[in-house]
Amino acid sequence: MAPIPAYQREGFARSAGGFWPQFPHGAVAAVHEMTLNGVDLVSEHWETAASAADVIAYYREQMAARGWRDVTEESFELSPEMRNNGTGSTGLQNQEYAAKYRKILESSLVLNHGPQCLQINAVPEENKTGWIDVRICAAATPSIKDFIESLAAIRPDDGKDGPARGPIDAVQHNGGQRYHTTITAQPDEPAPVFQRTLADLQSQGWQLVLTKPAQNARADYFACLSRDKQYAVLFVRASTDNRGASVTFTEVAPE
Image 1 (cartoon, one colour):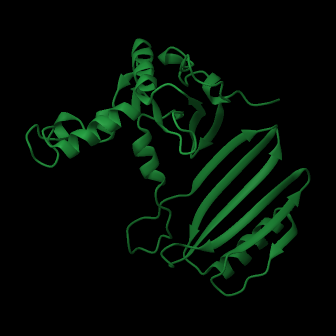
Image 2 (tube, rainbow, N blue to C red):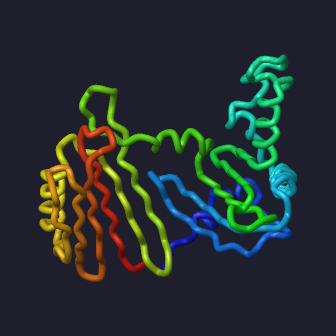
Image 3 (cartoon, rainbow, N blue to C red):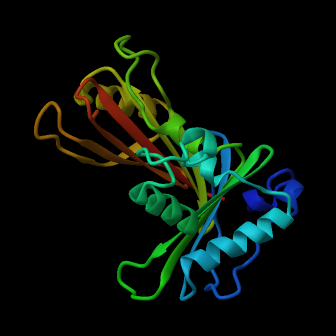
């Protein structure tokens, strides 16, 4: 039995009056859902010939009527307490800052409703003159900004820069398949991390189907595995700070 989409689950967006409305002049868009580190996310992407300002104004009005609070200024640190009203670098009399302020408010909208948030971005299409690219994301968390920042870094717990962050755990549903991805950090070189992880997976019944030979000790390591009706991909690479390895494991299973 297929899982109930995040946006239809009790408690997700329902308490705020339902899902967001469809913009009158926007193309019909498929809704995508995933769970990332335990947080339900729902998103859609579409194009329109309407202006970005019209899209943002529509959703600001429609969602306010559903009880959502506009927190765009706070999210982009544009709220009155974050700026001065004079001619300083963050003053509304400063032409450069005023232009930035106006551009953000005409292309972005961040809304909050209790434990849920919604972000809408409307920017010009790169390859279509006169068209606007619209992306909407709802999350079962009070702040998308804080949530993204919590995922911004995964590093080994080597005691040099504070506690480790991670892992990242994401679940997506698409085409009758369930995709479960975890990303973790290890303090060792990629080669031993790959061998340990592969041995652990094989002890769980995973069979090695394909692997890419490594060229050196800090190269990327890749393996494809299978188990019953499932398949998985293991990818190990050196961390960006060269102090360990990042391990990505994606498991695909039928719903």
